[in-house]
Length: 284
Image (tube, rainbow, N blue to C red; front, side):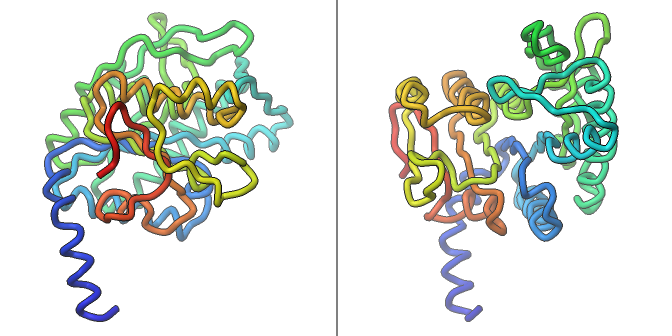
């Protein structure tokens, strides 16, 4: 890259660095970016870069592919309803082992000493009740205790949170990662909520990425659901975005996790990426 290009990039990034310095950003991490090693390393390096630039970064992760792989290995069929995994007792054991164990610690290991692995059971961070009897051990978050997260952020660490919560009796529950990320962002009064996924953003035609919808005012969401544009696994993702916006998170965006350095492109460039959710105001 030529010196002039480098200078232009840094010049473009400067106002964004100032905007986000000292602010909290919650990233929901999942999809292909979790299983492609090049993408995974790029995401983790981006998060360390953000931390060095003074952004308070919280990483919330699922682990659907790893859970599916383990369930297949032990001969348990994966079932979904409304974008949520049906989680019986044996499935919950595997979810807890995979998410709070291997997936979580593999991510921590890539954060150059900055990451600290947690799950929603630590410090009673994510307290929940059963969402729906037919879904089994799938939790609805009642309370978020941010004490541990705040302590880590104040010490310069990146909390890496696996979305396993617990009820008042200490029973573990599987929590949708998009929903959990939104609730955590709200509790932290975050500046920005970013959801990394395997598509370019919200598409009018899910088979055609040229139909990307770059901006959605939150009042338009119900119309998109009625039209079938928001369906399946996109429902909890976008409901979480809307919830976050209505409850004070300033920006919420879905970005394409298959693109190298998509987090930095979204944060620090005029181009941005994906689909921005907003309330009564437009992206500048």
